[in-house]
Image 1 (cartoon, rainbow, N blue to C red):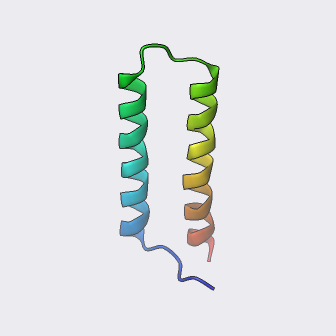
Image 2: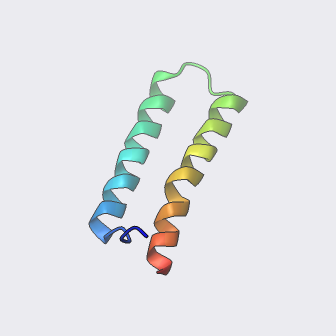
Image 3: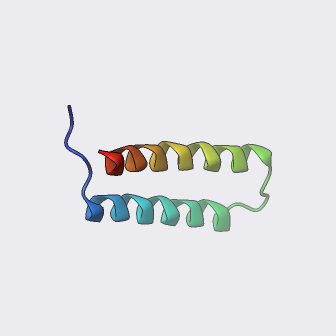
Length: 56
């Protein structure tokens, strides 16, 4: 069993994910369906473990 994430680790992960999304959105000329879908999937992969960590 892993230790739960600390608040600082969670904030750092969210800020890094937001920065990556910003870079992807600003560098891409065309925003289309697959890009939005991949951002939503990446959001789920980032947010779900953080929420599970705080529930413990």
